[in-house]
Amino acid sequence: MGRAPRFQIHQPPAGQVAPYDLLQVQQRMLEWSERLKTLCPILDGVFLETSDGSETIPLTTTATDYAHKLGRKWRGYIITYQSAAFVIFATKVSDDADAKFIRLDAGGTTDAHIWVF
Image 1 (cartoon, helix red, strand yellow):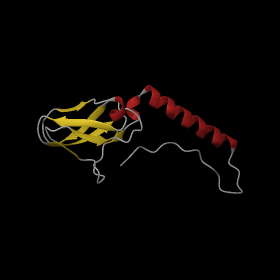
Image 2 (cartoon, helix red, strand yellow; image 1 turned 30 degrees about the horizontal axis):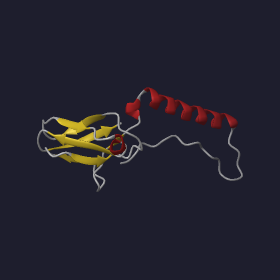
Image 3 (tube, rainbow, N blue to C red; image 1 turned 45 degrees about the horizontal axis):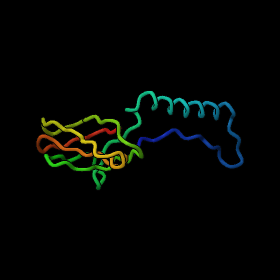
C-alpha cells in the first residue's frame, strides 16, 4: 500500500490561470497538514507490507526485520488485525537500522496488520 497520499498544489493547465484564492487555500491546507502530522505523529505512518505487497505480516517467535519505508526512525506501531491471541512486540536494534526496519516477533505464530509511525 505504501505511504498515504500527500496534498499537492494544483497547477492549472498550460495557458490557463488559476484563481489566486484557490492557490492560497491549497497552500494553507498543505501547511495545516504538515502541522497536524507534527502534533500527531501517528498520522505520519504506513501499513507494513511484505515483499510481495501484502499487508498481512506473518509473525513467529523468531525476530524478523520488516522494511517500513518511513524514511526516518519509527516511533511506534499499532496492531489493527491479529489472527491469533499472541503478544506482538518490536525490538529496537540501532538508530541506523530503525531508520529502515522494524524488528518484530510474537509469542506464537500469528498474522497481523500493523500501522507503523
